[in-house]
Image 1 (cartoon, helix red, strand yellow):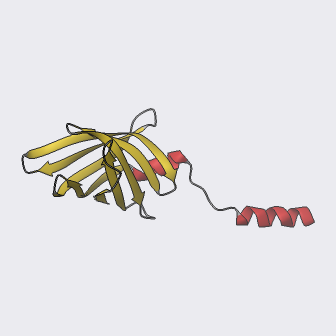
Image 2: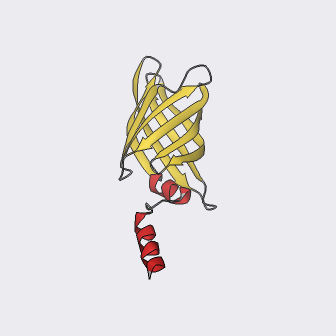
Image 3: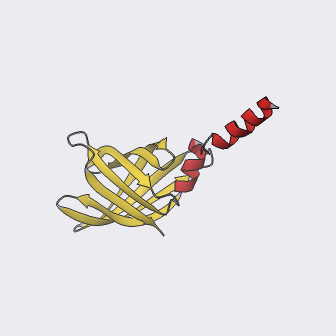
Length: 128
């Protein structure tokens, strides 16, 4: 009887955990927001998709004074249930983007940087 009670207590005390695949599935979608680029904030659309083999990749399009710049988001890694890190790449170079999602995965706040600068510039989005 004591062992049954122990296992019941143990089962209810272990927090629910989402697997990396669950987290990645929850971030799939398109987000509208802004990112700091150059000397000001520019509008950006950030999207994450899951391919047929279950891998997630992303793309982004930011509006600049000269037009639209498109880039890719790769090597997406789950840091925790609401946090992911990835590599961004576009014509300006590449670097790291770290994102923290809200509990419902509707909003994210992120920061990006490159090889010369730390991850300090804002990048955010709201699910469309």
